[in-house]
Amino acid sequence: TISNKKLVDFLRKIAEENKIKYQTDILLGGGTDAGAIQRSKSGVPACTLSIPTRYIHSVVEMCHKDDIENSIKLICKFLENAHRGEF
Image (cartoon, rainbow, N blue to C red; front, side, top):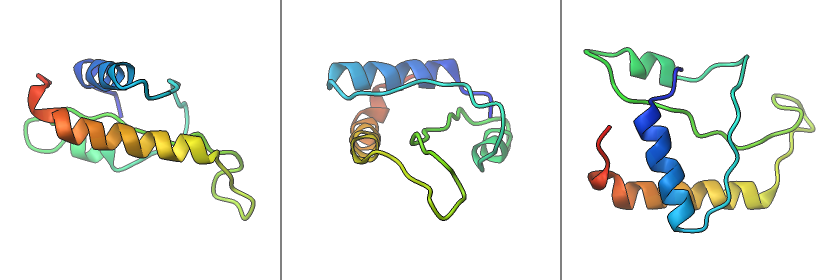
């Protein structure tokens, strides 16, 4: 997925307005359904919201509870405010 800059900026703004901790990263491997969604019809703004995870796809996969909770908060605030965005 090539993240839509306006959408990423909007998510960042929501996180900062609501004091929700977040991290940014560019992942060089892996994949999600966002790429296919992004290319559907005439194009759909998309980005991927991932939770930092160690040892992904293994029996010892782990992540920090705060990262999960902050991701949930960000998604909820995004849904409450999506009508304000222009992306």
